[in-house]
Length: 211
Image 1 (cartoon, helix red, strand yellow):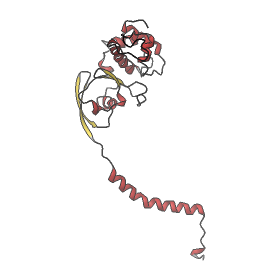
Image 2 (tube, rainbow, N blue to C red):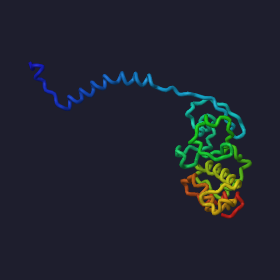
Image 3 (spheres, one colour):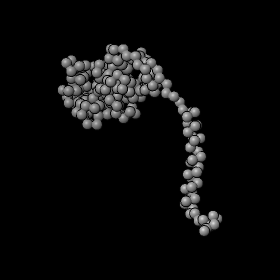
Image 4 (cartoon, rainbow, N blue to C red):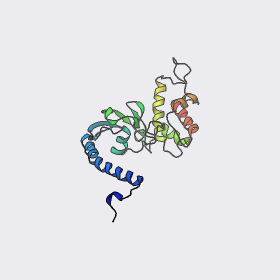
């Protein structure tokens, strides 16, 4: 019979045993620390006027405006694309200005007036931009189209108010809605189908100009 001191153990086995012992000792302490320091989600009641209707909703304060529209109100026309404010698929009109709904929290806009693609027109009575997108085939797969159209609505309003862009030739004059201006002002909206030429044509027709 071997003496206990004569037992042989490899260096690898020794490391395994040591690691297992350390983990077993640390796990209860880590669990207790996490439980004590855990922050419970905070909810808030938010009132939004969306497409002319007022909605009062209780939600996690971290809920984005995009998720409030899609998950709470089931207005799924507004799309979740990159969720980082880079593709523009989530563009809506917020108090008359176009915004990326994925980049702002719903609680920041209590009482705000919001227009989504569902509020611009109906199948029986299309918004002029919706009709133009159909006419010029500016939608193709259609995923980016709600954001494109809402962005175009905001863009045309900016032009009507004389707000210049980076390519405006004269900052003191009302911008001319050329193809270059449209492309610059719509550059925050990405179309993976590459229907940019058709989108420019649709917007130019509604604007009454030749791009």
